[in-house]
Structures are given as structure tokens and as C-alpha cells.
Length: 215
Image (cartoon, rainbow, N blue to C red; front, side, top):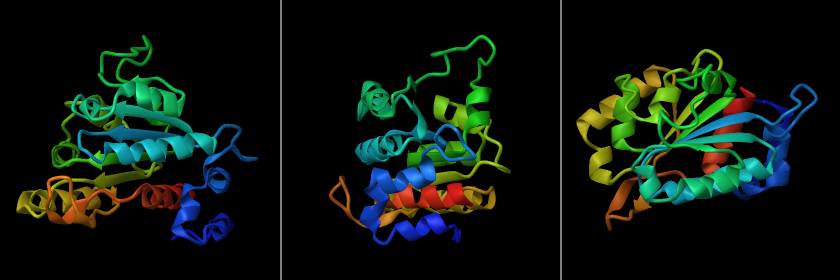
């Protein structure tokens, strides 16, 4: 964990939901005129609703948040919601918001100070590990420079899916490739199971993101 003095402001998990405190990490600084540039990639799962809180708190803290969503993710929460929360256009397809000088959104990836993929479903995790760019989320992620930009994955899936040998191999490979896995937690799930696979809570995601950003 970073020994940055700014972390001393956070004494409880609730502090990681406080935009004023978060601004010390994610907002403008003497070295950075604008807030931290955070790319949030969202895949399709019921836990999408938790990401609304994450994006809202980051924006309130002064971060520059760009959101991309898989097609399945838009079935749970609309892109308009994340556009309103982030204050920026939302990417839902490689063919939207095409800048003539950056058709694959390479410059967007280059600008990112940190990346959060949440929820990271079983399918999206597999795509990341096997270098498949079948969605705008994994397309942008494929252009991230892992040597300078931390990438956090927040798995979210049914407990049986989480425990599949193929999925656990993908988790291990994702970590070996330099991704940080945040969670998952254990408890009641939307499928009425009780077990491991719940996506981490917003305060835990913000904490992990803040610590990763501080290095």
C-alpha cells in the first residue's frame, strides 16, 4: 500500500465515499491542472448499479471520468445515466464518437491515469485474458499501456461461475498480466445464491482505485 500522506484522511470505509476527501487524490493538484483521468469500463451484470455511485463520487471529487459500456451493460443501466453522472459522452460501440484522428480511441487510452473494469463479468474477464476486442470496453483496454497505467478488475458473477476452473485460471492469468483483482466479496446474490462472486462495494472500489493511482 502507498505511504502517501493523503491516505491519512481516510480513517473509515465511509470516508472513501466522501467527495471532499476523495478530491485530494482524484481532483486537480499543483502538478495536475485537471482531475485524474479515470476510464471506467462496464460489462453486463446486475452489479452495474453500484458503479453509478463510483462514477458519481469520482466526478464530484473532480476526476475526469470516461465511461464505456458493453451492449449487455446497457440493458441494466442506460448510457444516459452515466453521461449525466460523469458529465462526458459514454462509449457503447467502437463506431460511436469516432474522431477522425483516433478511430480506435487510442488517445483516450493514452490519456487514462487509471482504469476500472466493473462489473467484470466472466465473459469480459475471458476476453481480457485472451486479448479479444469484441466490445468497446475491451477495445479501449487493449490500448492501455500497462507499464504506466494501473488496471483494476472487479469481478461480479454467480458463485458457481466464479468457482469454475476455467474462470479461476483466467483470474490467475489476469493477475500475472499485471491486472489488479478487486474482490469479489461473499454473500447474498441476485440469483438467490449465497457465496463468493458479489462485486465489491463502491467504497472498496474507490479505495482500491485511489491507492493504485497514488502508486
